Length: 225
Image: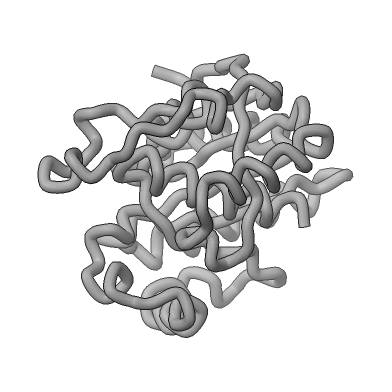
């Protein structure tokens, strides 16, 4: 199936790097201040298989994470959040998703079409399946397309499935910055080495509604900074 255009209502909170430790009231308050700046943005979500593209789009569209995506041992940890907190009804985000790019000409053209229509390009990486050669190829291609555009879209790299990294999970808020720098150096540097400009990199998880909200909050903060 080719890319599917979804005109949906999306919304998120904006918080700093320690977003995972903010209370929902704080997230909601900051999110509401960003409604005007994000309304109508076109977002392309790109990445290979099993990185969380569909889950991210579903969360942006509905505020929900599919049950089948959640790890069984964590399902019971998901707390109920009032619908108004992440109602996803105030930002009219135009969300676009593509299938995996196998490397063929048609698939690359599909990515380019999405990229060239987007204000924000989100490239997802699965922390458990990092392929630096693939990342390097994809990001170099995205950068070359971006340079040919005016205005250029905002590119953000999101590393998902961090809930499966026990060190990340056990790291306190004060150490997340150091952990991120070390993770990027060990796992992503080779894939980023040829870029003339390094995109912002966000580590997070889509394992449940709370974690998805925190990840998206950081994304929104990043693209509106």
